[in-house]
Length: 474
Image 1 (cartoon, rainbow, N blue to C red):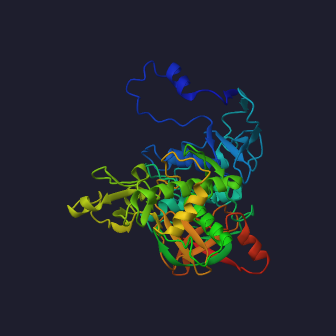
Image 2: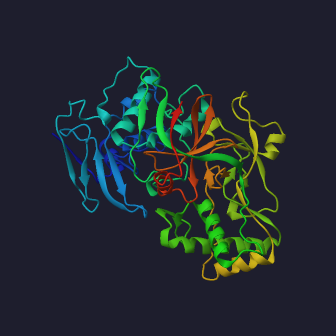
Image 3: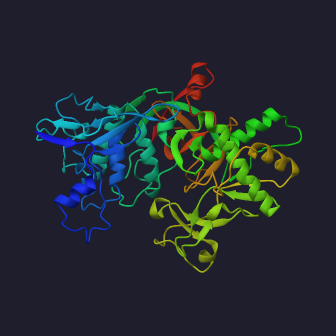
């Protein structure tokens, strides 16, 4: 029998029992045991965490973590508050339900593991290491089993982030062999429910296992896609209610309804009743920037730094600009997180791989007109808000704003293009943007779709206003 204390300090334990001195291990990386994970797919979160570690055999990115315990944190909706923890995997129980529930108020709880030699019941998904399989087969097995056992499509949230470096690799299967950390989009599936808790409807094609056939709803194609948010906040014809709705829309598109405290820290919750506070803080920030510059401004939504000279391209101290700022972005290097300022680009600086092409694009920004009407609106909304100089809209992710053929507005986290399709797939907590290639689709990005994050698309489908379709994802 083996006993493990849930609340054990892993760093202290290793320090005392394995390393007499930490000299030489200052940059060592650790994975907690159990590793704490949000969302419905704890093993996928663990594999995501393990990507930053190198491996001589890419298959060991999976096999080395099959026995590693994960504390699956469960959150309620829509507030996203922690309510309980499940621990995976646990021997002695059915493989289809391999967990126990741990009340989060308990401390020092001991988990008793039966027969540590039991491979099937002591590993995630009951997988056994099989070095006869190639990398693609191993990764595809994990991705497929995650859909079947977790009964959700969370693996797609991981897959699209690595799909852009190799178009011959299926976009729904994550590349866990990458050893660089993936820039994690700020869209947190825990706080959304686009398919309203429905389970996935998947058709497995054994003649073409790289192709995933899933059921979902088509919410239209992109008509407009750019990095500058130019929303019609006010005009002389608009009444107060419309202004409220449009200012609220801008707030949601830039913050994704995430709740930030007055210190600017993201609390991992939906804004809910705090949305008005979010609006007030954004209005206060925008008002100060307009008053300082006295001209139409662009408020940066990203903190972008040049990877050559290490100077900030935008976002430093929330400063606004009078014109949109350009830079050059590589979608492949560093998993889409490699940027060069125009000055370095003009002197011949490029990314590491000569064959890669950098794309010029604008820094994601909110364009705000310098008018008396805008001033009046901002003053009204900012009257009761405190101001600490922070940009409540600032993130560290690439951002694209889009408008669909249905008139819906949204925010994406990769370079999307007109013609791309927005879908809500059964079993997914987030909408996705996909690009059609022949008879199939490739995942491009998860996205925030205004007014469609809490099952509204499912309601439209039940009322006959949307049609169910089969999407073949490769």
